[in-house]
Image (spheres, each protein chain N blue to C red):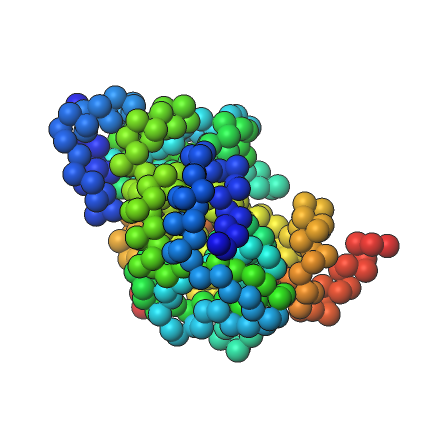
Length: 192
Length: 192
């Protein structure tokens, strides 16, 4: 049986039996990917939702200048897809790549719908997960509205030091909208 | 019985009986508010979730310069709260005001938890609603990363003309991070 780490989440309130867990695991495909593997390709149909068991993914797009811009990171225990196009199985503009060697659970739209219909006790878990995701995204928009890119870096460095140290600097720069060179200067100033 | 417009959503798949609908309505308080009424106050505990039956709400914060900055609008058939603090009943930095005379359904955190526990057939509706909300917020972050404020206005004017014409111009400016004067210039240029 695959390891379903999400069933250990504090957002899970139902007590799933071993038989149920085993059945739930059949909806997922367990995958190991090397660093920088592309799991979702811009311009293609978005038909998979990913859960990060180990490692890190990022959701990004290619801007008008041909530059990669990271919109969202997903570390362990996060779900990632293009949440607008995944339910509809429509074309996405987003890419998803692994940032590190990663172990993920993959589920297709059809399997996901079937899973929730067969195991309705999972509904509250996904509802609460997306409630938090939506709330965190609005909070991030608030930061983008109120902080300069420099202030945003200082905020992230203080609030999420582990994240800032773990993620490659060129991706952190892409996430914040800074050049890698400028981010490196900022980091030096912040340390000294 | 209160009008529960959300039960007519295409995201509702369960066929609720009239008795169920009547029972669901008992969890909500139906409220009519004049224009510019404050429903959520920054610095206070966030303990209500709102559904817009008629009218328009906006979620905003006060920035370092004392200026209101709109993070999210909610027109008819949208839910609005601080989705991070509402489940926890913790202090919010956000305000919610009516933009127009509005009719809303209000539900407290405790009532909401009770509603979903008593009527689990509502879970998929809320899960899908927040899936879309999360996806739309990530899409908006993508636009904030790729467009200048001017391009963002042109995008909104083309994609959501009804919204751009309905919302007061000073709030649209606050949402886009422009001064009302500059937005007015942009609109003139765009029309001519």
